[in-house]
Length: 502
Image 1 (cartoon, helix red, strand yellow):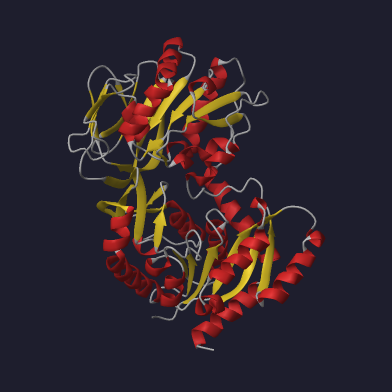
Image 2 (image 1 turned 135 degrees about the horizontal axis):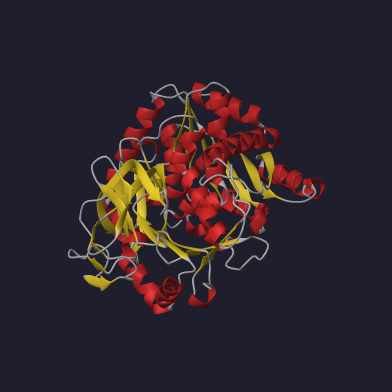
């Protein structure tokens, strides 16, 4: 391989904090003047990121590329797995759909193909960059899967990368999970682990020190850092595994109530992230009709299986509640991507791409008809959004397998150079768009929230946050935090030793 120095972060389990730590090291190496790239060979995620050439990768790798201050490419995540039905996923290869596969078939038939894709991408990255920060997935100690795994120790060997093992103390049993993982690794793989990081620590570090000493004496592995928990970190979540951390309760201290429908196949829920940082907004994710109440905004986010999630809305009673809310005219209802498709009167799936139900009636909140298509649209888009008497230049990204057409009286929401995107009803209380990231456009978000405040008799709030500025500040804050609590000198030394073959 080339001249890049790699480092790999693996975890004792999912959600140990690998993505955030990789993001931190991408920013740290970039700050230190190294041309740096993230890499995750295979990512299973429902949150996607669109590269500048219109390809789809895991959102975490796109965010990590932003932290490294480079443009994301599909070489940073050559294989993306997007679950869409029970025991079946869409396999995305270099940003484009490859095929739908069941887990057993993927493991049996895709292994050699995947191996070649990973080797090629690693070769490209090592010839292009000076530092590669590699993220594993799940646990390297999945002994039932390790003979054909494509994302942990096999990748570390391929890249000749030293490995740092991450344990999450917040979940409890961190020493047991670290020691158990090390004991289940083959000797060669265990030797590749240069040390461990204990993540999400809260409390008095002195109470942890006897355990740290015991761990180093009994495993021979260094504790490279204990990272205190960082609250309110404005960096995108990796996947829906973290949704259970969001509340479904009302908060009377905040003046505006935003309800996000959390259907089973929810995707790209990070579209609502900017609202978490608004001083007057309380965001809650809801799964049952009785939780809906009477919010100021209801958001139907993206879905990896629009038809099945639409059936969920109907079966759960949420669909009926949405119709009642729209009739009262007291809530804004906003659909994004799959949520936008659900707002229409009909969804057709003639090729049974998403469901054996070839057609379903939608929520009929907008006069739209959608047909699910075989080809996926993935692109960066921008245009002019008309809301009230104002026009806003907005940017976003599209990821959808479907075409939506107006079938009645409705106004376009966004005017692009060559077409319209999205529609709204006459009083602008129901709106939908294919634009992911629509609420990341600060001026439009401010106008929407102030429109609602005015309707509730509240004074407007101007000069709200710049979400992009918040994200940049978060990258720097995260990098500073890791520098303070992790032994970077040892990690740098081990990277150089591996590169030199010491």
